[in-house]
Image (cartoon, rainbow, N blue to C red; front, side, top):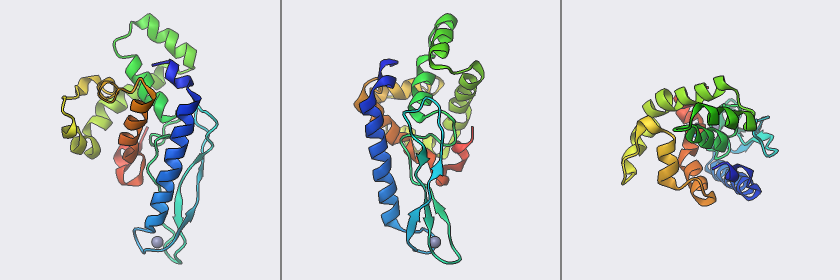
Length: 186
Ligand SMILES: [Zn+2]
């Protein structure tokens, strides 16, 4: 799983998917007034980053509306400071590892203990309870063990390979939008 985090092609593909998702959201127009949307990206400086500096976001041009629409993202999971693939894969990797190996992995990737703990709590409490997950969990033929998230999802999607990881990030992408505010925190 560690190797895939150095896969340049993966990051190119994720960026391309995000661009497509933003375009698609733009074509849909404003949900409130039907107005035209223009780009109003957020500057980001995520860690574990492949040089991504903008989180795509849209803004309504309608006078008196100006509402934002944040398209789903396969690169950013909510407001976390690390990019999504790191949050997913590292959280999964440490499940079942000995303390010593977790420490080595943390050091290699420069992630502190508190961050790892926060991610764990996010998966265990916020993600598991989310409307998104409760609506989606039934679609898997094999039951995904919730006590083992996100490892269960990584296995089901085969996300230690590029293709599977892309699919998993697509699956998770709605949680990065404003319609899923409850899971955005942390
Ligand atoms: Zn509008």
